[in-house]
Length: 414
View 1: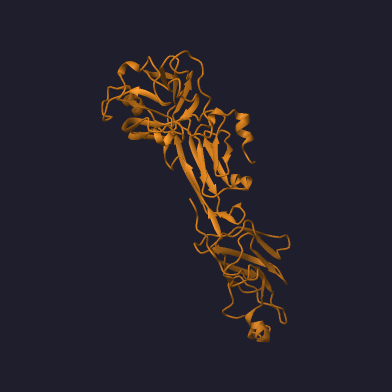
View 2 (view 1 turned 120 degrees about the horizontal axis):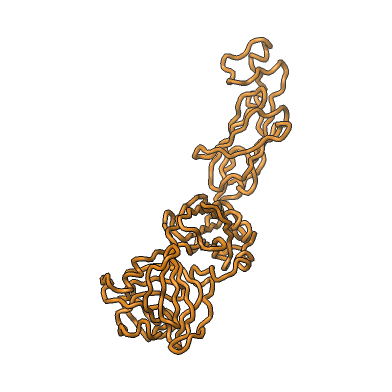
């Protein structure tokens, strides 16, 4: 998905010097002339200047009135003479930009950079002077990216669900982007990121999530430079939840699937897997999509015109490349538990229409949720129990659990 470029006018100078208007005009206030009478309109908290005192000169970076200031450097307010009593920098929504004074209180520096495309107001008070107010706005980035995340905010998922972030622009500074994303869990557990490509970053713990875990994804990508001249736009937190633990083990030598929930056997179903020419991937797979009914065409997975079934019931995706565990109403009921006859999917007996509650296809679909784990063992086709296919690629679907913890951690940029 592309992101439109935004053109901006030339950048204005980054530094300016502002003196008190009265001093510039050469006008001396009455209070200074008399040397003994304070103005009735003096600002609250200010101290009357002694006769002959020079008004402090304040310098602000970016310059007052700048319309396209850079957003890659902090804001600074400096008192060329005297000291600073107070500095406040607020954005157009009223929130403040945090900052600190140096030890002599002659300089205030924001502790983070201003946001892009934002208007700011600077209010500064030098000791013994009235408040001065300046404004500037930052330019919008020329090109931007965002991260689309899985699972969706608020979703309750199975214990195998990783947090997967897919970016709309290739990332070259992986460390900067990964540092700007946090994934925390309650109960607490170490969570580490792994780059599958320059557009995909997944997060997971060493073992499956504990049932009942609350997961928070923190995206602080706004103005992070993911690639040369390409900046992020998101600053948000989203929360997901982990439900009960359900892990199903498919043994294609035995042609059975055993479903265990929270450590106890829930059901055992007869199944049919890939045949000798189209063996099923082995390994740990995670349910990433669910359809009560869907159409399956062999041409979409590189198998020509071998099949086109427009009403496959209770289909649950296991790989991006097209492996599903699904109901099957077109094959003889006798194959389930006795023969592996599919083109690589795992089939359970089902009926047309997806409404027969007595079938294994219906029962397994009803018991499942996104993020549930399906482990496939012994995908050896019709004869024997040898492994007839390699372990699924960890990047093929949400299947990073096939990497050891050492290999997973090695994929982090931090």
